[in-house]
Length: 179
Image (cartoon, rainbow, N blue to C red; front, side, top):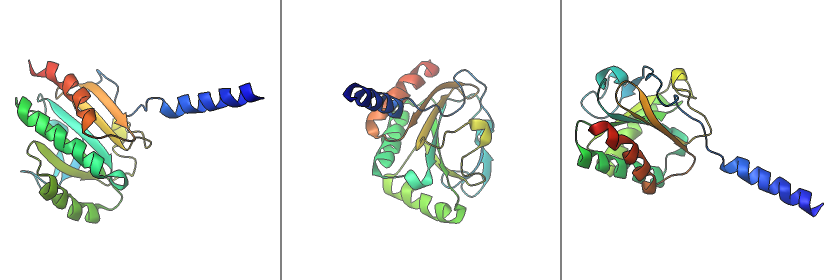
């Protein structure tokens, strides 16, 4: 009986720690992303980001609005700083997945004012609480990060918990695209 209990605990722990699949498959074509820009040059407009960023290295970060916290803010801040250092017209598009567009539209400028992002546009998507359908976002992932060359998905990361230490894996996936 003890062995069975231990086996069940081991299996359930392994399943809980299994990687979350979220976002388009690596090497697949980048699906369109139309969202409301809240900060940056296009603030106040609905933008097709995948068109405006076509052929430019871009990191898309999808954040469940109800899961945004200080560690996620630190992740965004350090990711933004890393992209500023890399240069080469790299950019982050951070998209809040929300069911309250007005509240999020009011909140995101405060986030920008607080963490002072330079290479990041904050946007919101409120058409579906699961996010853009073509992006295949998993609702178990609090944050999904997609690294692209502007045309294809080159890497994807899905986390339930993250902070600034996760930036290294994203920049490692981005650097080969800058040569």
